[in-house]
Length: 260
Image (cartoon, rainbow, N blue to C red; front, side, top):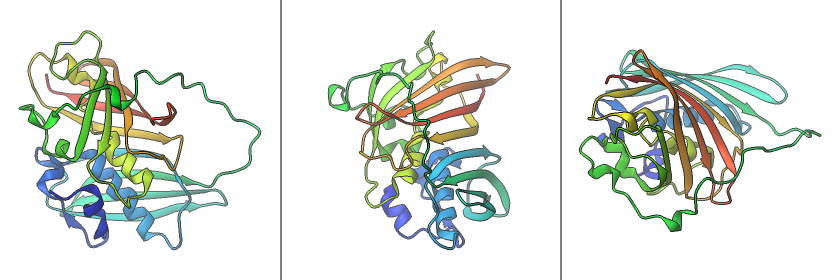
């Protein structure tokens, strides 16, 4: 079972790769690692170092199976911001399309942070939870150490659809911190899954991310997802990631298809 570090050590986005089963969810690639590989492909394909990653928009279009190829293209390169698009192909079919925004730091008189306090204690206060042992858990969850820190559990008929969990990679040594956080950021099931009374399919459609710290430090990150609205077979959820110092380092939104 290759870790993220091992997966990226020989990754060549242009040549493509057959993703190991240990990074899959059902018949498709886990969305977090697919997105992280696309970011890595954009970094590899650019002439010279890109500025830090600031934002990402992902549309999951079809099953990401078979040979995965990553095709990045610079859409515009300005003094501060570089816009890069990445198409991900599963054999010859389009599986995902990403829009990435890389931006250099600039001097600014405007600086504030109203993110609020860390909504849990540190990771040492909680016990490990073997998500992979649950009968509905996808294979990729084995790549992470997880410690629930509040909220509800999956398939618990929860009235408040919230997940709150400390997570870290089994091994992300040498991986760009932003790429590692992207690979982790979608590791929990969609928050609407806590409202299920029995396991049923659920699938991400889009994922929008803003990196507030483009070089997040540390191993453990507290991930929160909250389903703000669900109806007609779709859920809209809000997402955040905190570091151990209590700073929000990533925010996101996700649209989810619900088959229950």
